[in-house]
Length: 360
Length: 128
Image 1 (cartoon, chains in turn cyan, blue):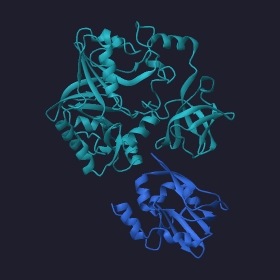
Image 2 (cartoon, helix red, strand yellow):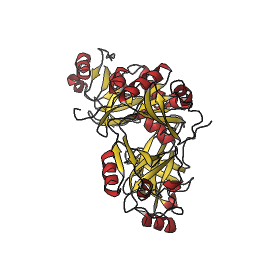
Image 3 (cartoon, chains in turn orange, cyan):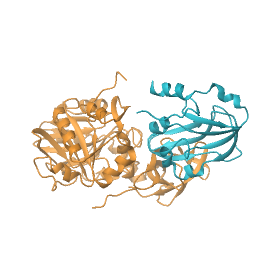
Image 4 (cartoon, chains in turn cyan, red):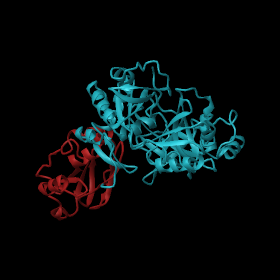
């Protein structure tokens, strides 16, 4: 365990009896009170997650927009200051190097938040492909807390200097929290309303403690996974990777071929758009109680046709759900397939994504 | 956290217990195992009449995060499986040693349990 890194909130997590696990080189809380309880807290009230392990960069310079447009299939020129775009970095084959969010702060300044496991890879890729861009890695100097849930805004408003109620989804601002400069974005990974807050380590510790006092439930990576899966949000390295394109992964909505110029991987996506993709990431619902898990095979009429990429018993949906790749001809909602679980096959049905949608 | 490990039971290093009564063994998993798993959401147990072997899988327990094999502490024939726990595996946490038993096995060789761990030995194993 010696080689695992710890976030500024590690001691707080331990003091709250969190169960710690190794994750992407970090020692992170997988659960505090229990995954199901934490999951329901986010759906009904509010939970908070230490996501300081995620990679954080700032980009600046005159030519930034032109430069980063070449790295992603989304048209980032549409963003106004204070807006953000969830998108992917693509390789030459159209495969996904990482999924990430670009936050445009105006005056040629951008903040980028990426997955922990891919931080170095993303840094290297951007460094190699961006020319004349000032590039800062804040991954070690800044902490990151996700405050998520139906009532997240009420809990945060009690602490943050600025009223966050009017901030639109994916909008962000710079403000003060308990005297510390903070970057606050209305983004998250739970399918619920919520915020991600970046600030210095001391500020993060104070914010975590204040949120605890207002009744926000500390949550671990376990609930983060069940929440994002109900919302059918992809997990990098599991549902998407360098061999899957955004069109195969159901991320066509972030591919803006019509409104932007060239970008790395464009020709592959153009070809897939024109001729169709061979496989698609679909939502699956088990017909019985058995739970499909990562890497379980998918069968249709006795033939192995695909693979489960994520699966769990979904606490809010109340059923076993999964994401997996199947041939396009088997990807329509209503399609019956079978999942191989410990040598036996069990029925599952292709369903629309997401499995869960928040109500106002 | 300290858990209860009744002295009347025998334990395995894979966190099952067995309670021998005549030639019938009642088998389940320990409070420690249940705590480690977290919220239990799925349980798969063998049908009555199934032959089980000492140290071999007889079923599966799944939490939200993990899938674990259940290993039999004894060889024999399954007499009964606890279908109440299969229907509501979340209740295992309430009482793993009485209402939360998993299977009853007609034991073919009771001496197989002689080398199983005592409650004290199991406790010192899991509590270090």
